[in-house]
Length: 434
Image (cartoon, rainbow, N blue to C red; front, side, top):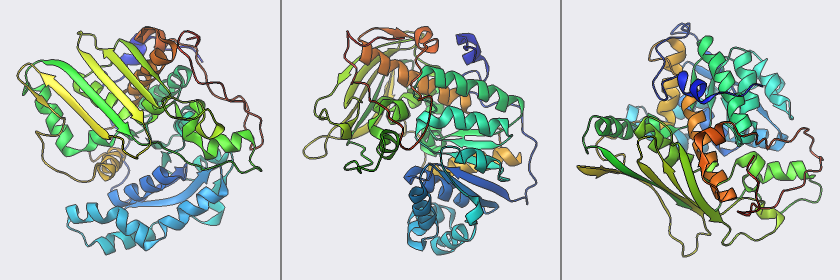
């Protein structure tokens, strides 16, 4: 695949503007059939969110690498208590009886056995199964390949963040974003904060000058570890093990700054209307043992990122054990006339996890603005990768350097028993930026 120039990256959507063109609208009474690729906790939740967002939607197909993951997800989607707990807040805001909304969601889970696909090629079978919308919620290492296939097949998509774990993957994703734009396919990313009413209103007021000229930004994501396994089953090969414990391995998760802290980085990019142009960072491992359970990612990372106008973003993320450690997820925008936490100048609204799917469905049906958030989520993914690579290498990494990097972390073959050695954790001064 040819590389994408910086100019090409920025051209498609004027960074964060909603494209003015519209898709061919679906009839307002037409049922949109959805397929779920990636049946973990986030994927299961996303399916409920979509079915909550519009009563004219159905979930008709599911795909995962593992049969047990798919079966567990389907069980939860048919569990009245699980669904009720996940629709209650939205139902109350919408003035609907929660039990009725939950029952409606469950009734629209119509995944027959012949539409339950398992394996590394399961996503291809799902895309070919007559769906209109594809929810892409696997670990992010797979997002470029899955998105490319969905767009090539003419499907609208919900893509969880981030959209890649390396620059080669980001460029592959961006090539498909261009195709989606040309074909008027709707693309909504899992940046639910951007669908949150109080944040939308606050960001607009900041842009209108409510706190004066922006002079600095701060973003923190200080949380606890994300672990998907407690130990390795002796029957699992390397690739199965790394999938079952995916958050610990760089190639499939991207490290915390990419997989999780991207929310804060995206918020700051949203406020600034662009991406940073360079980063200097530091990080490492303070507590994660050098054992296979903990993989090869850092447990803390600090970065200073600089925007084109010289404004600096102080970015701090870490995942420390919960006992006696401090947690905070917060942003601060400092202006010449005041400051904002990004939510303090807006009114409460609907659960943004549901609102983003309302926006997607309205875009598909032509009932609201056309949504193609592909450039935005790609820029924020690349921002996070730039911070990570600055910490790993100890170098100052510029936007042009990261945009044109040849780093490609993806395996070239896939099999449950495939041997897949884990590279050591990066050491600044020894790590080679490519």
